[in-house]
Image (cartoon, rainbow, N blue to C red; front, side, top):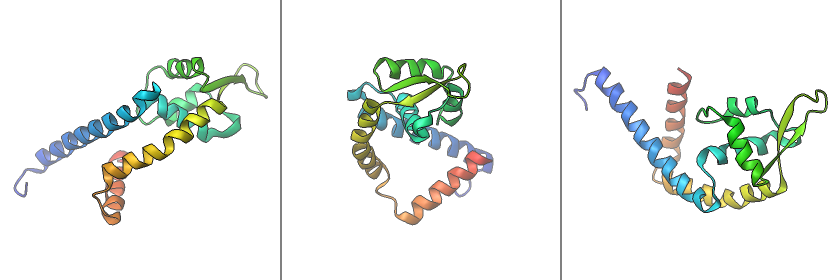
Length: 145
């Protein structure tokens, strides 16, 4: 790669990043499948859990998603049918509906926390701390442009 044109090198970096992301997400999807969750559903659960008791509007959830989903309401509906999240009216503006975590949803997240950390250990365990810090910094630079 030493002689590769910088434009081709950028293209190679793009392809390698996409392949890596796809492989990492496939691992996560496999872990979540027995619980009938997809990575986007899991992401919504984590976002709602992080919001605390106040919850979030669907638009706020959409802004925080890792990958953009065109229909956050549909994802929330699927979680609500399973009683993993709930909906409630905003206290100050009854027109606003907030998505909140249920105890069932929190229990599922708690149960998945250990296996998810173990998966990430397996995915990135070959990299020493300094390499991980550099990788995160580089990816943040690309993302932040």
